[in-house]
Image 1: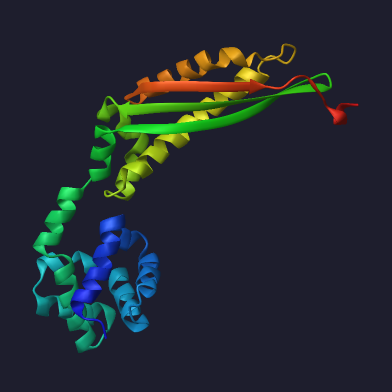
Image 2 (image 1 turned 180 degrees about the horizontal axis):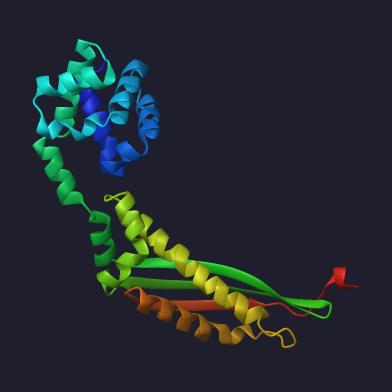
Length: 242
């Protein structure tokens, strides 16, 4: 059988990656993660029951015996298991661990704000008119950084709230997913906006840069490097038109 320290280490690993609130929000995911860590199924089930009973919110306020008594009363576990889990929770929420988690809060955001980040966008669209079409595409490589953290927070606040230990790379993905949609929408409009006039992709790099600059200004980012390559095909026949 696992010791209280081993159980505490298993849960600490999850919390250090996902945040304390992950226990309450995704208890069954905690259970399956512990199963994958080769914790005995019976103890995984016991831990799951205690999480569902919000026992993990009690350790700081109670002694070992008091916590074991609460576990017995709320979870109907036997004395040995209740004492084992009481010891586990008190180790898990030790003073050192709580300090570590407090110090690490929003560490990914701090890293994001202190670095430079590269991103590549690839998009395509097609212009159709009177039985012919032109295929268009662009590839943008850029480097960006955070200029105003307060302006950026609304864009990523859900991710920070969901997991205070979210990594900088995951926050970049949130930013870049939103940016990609903005660029793709502008590309679509550029290519298909005039049904009787073909697009001219050689002019799109300036348009794309303006769109990115506007997005970055709104969310407190700054563009450091920007490069855009474009392509458009010759007229091609739309076989379905005829």
